[in-house]
Structure formats: structure tokens, C-alpha cells
Length: 274
Image (cartoon, rainbow, N blue to C red):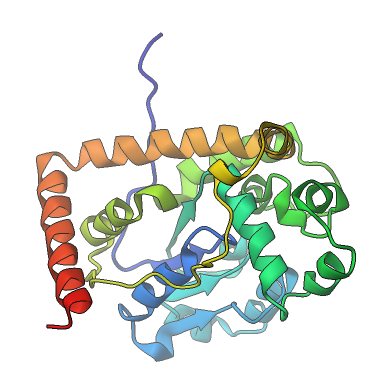
């Protein structure tokens, strides 16, 4: 089988960066890092808006106001760039679909402020019942749905959505990161977008979350069935990620090793109380 050619958008440091934050991918930690890279007056957050409201809110800004924005971040469907007049690029993080669904289930179960929490608790939903219920639309191929830009929550994910999601990743994103390789994702952001990457602490980590080892083979198979497109999309994103690392050459590995060593030293002093 021949080598596939993966190509992401080439970044321009003057572009407006759109961080498309997919639920339960580690995006809250990245948001905190991104906020430190920009003047607060030039950041627009959609975190407190519903999915559809993100586009509606931005459309109310004047061209001059939009041009002043250098970072748009938060939960949104792909496509918010259509109301921008200035150059832009997207960045995002994808997560192993099984791990993401488990994290989503535990988050809804344990977070009383979540809109679906009450229904899940009152009905005593286990993982299988949660998937079948459809109360969380992003539990079924959520990453594909969001990246496709097609807002069709009440319809099954389709081949068209999957195709669009792949095309959007390769055409509009300068960095496609992975939760499982978060530190390497940060190094890519540093090298490609010029960010200063601090030693960070993980946000929104659920101590009661399930892992793949905690679920049965039946539950795992069910998650896979509900996320067949996401599994394929994650594999594609992984290939994009590896190709981009490769394009950075040996300096990427040197910088990554140095970053990890700094992180270990800081954690040692924190844990030892020195």
C-alpha cells in the first residue's frame, strides 16, 4: 500500500485563530493556555453560548469589530469563519472516541449543572441506556458532526458528514491535536503559531471517570457502533498529526524532550513541597 499524502493548512501568524473546542477532549486546559497568548480585548469566547448561538452572536459584530478579534474559542460547529472577512485558521483537538464517550457520560452523571444531568440521574441510566437515550447528541459520532459543520442533531451521522469532516480538517486547520498526545500538540502550536507554552495543570479532570478497562466488551462494542465515523476520523486525524510532527524534523523531538523534562522538574518540586 502506497504512502498517503496528508497536508494541513499552512499557518499565518497574522490570522485570526479559531479554536473549535469539542466536548471532553481536554480543550479547557488548552483554552487556558490560549488565553495567555492574546490581549483579552482581542479574544471572543463562545463558552457560555449554545451551539447555534455562537454563529448568531458573531453575526451581530461589525466588520471592524470582527477584524480586531484574534482568537475565537469555545464550543461551536465548524463554519463560524464564514462571517469573518479577515484571514483565519482553525485549530482543534480530537480524542479517542471510546475515551471521549466515557468522559462525557461521567461528566453528565456527576455535574448537576449539566442540562442532561437530572434526566440521567432520575432514570438511573447506565452507560448503555445513556447511549440509547440520545440525551447527549455528541455521544453519537460527536466529533464528526461538529467538524462537518452540519447541524443535524436529530438525524443519524452520515457518510456526507464524515467526508466533510475529513475535508475540513485538511483544508482549514493548521493544527489538529490529540488528547492522548497533548504535550506534543502544544509543541506543534508553539512551532507553527509562535505560542509560548507554559507548564500547565490539567483542568476539568473527573476523579470518578470510567476508563476502557472499567467497561465490558459489550459496552465497548456499543460505543464503537455509535461512533463508527468518529473512530475513522480519529485515525485520519492521527495520520495528520504524525505527518505534521514529521515535517518539523528532529528539532521537534528535541523541543518535546526539553518540555517534558521541565514539566517533570516542576512536578517534583510541587509534590515535594520545595
